[in-house]
Length: 155
Image 1 (tube, helix red, strand yellow):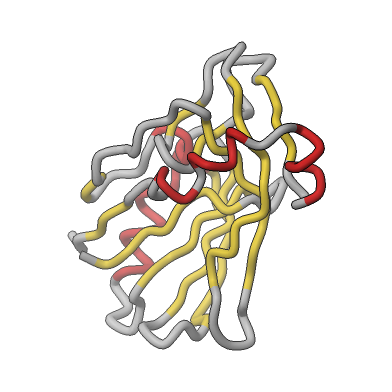
Image 2 (image 1 turned 90 degrees about the horizontal axis):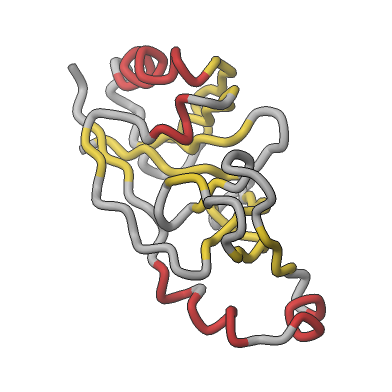
């Protein structure tokens, strides 16, 4: 088995945004939303689904900053989301229930490969990908919407 870890995003960067009114959020390309179902609002801080009725922000997050593969995409962040504890050698439930796009990078940020798989096959796919010693990390995305879900890093 190849060791890996997954961390939720740090909530400190997002906390001040919840104090902005809706007009100020729109000016920055963000939206405040209220979850209307128990599925479909995956928080990138807690790495869990928001419950119906919870308030979240929908905003753009730059998850790959360097080189020709620079990338950003939409993410949800729960207003009261606490950072998930580090997960080791297992995927969070929010990945298991979605079709995934896995983008695989080396230590310098160069794309080595990409693949799509069903979430229930995600752990096997990650294990297979990490068999390549060049792999430093995998960025997991929702294949249908393209949203960044989390980073899987070699541990």
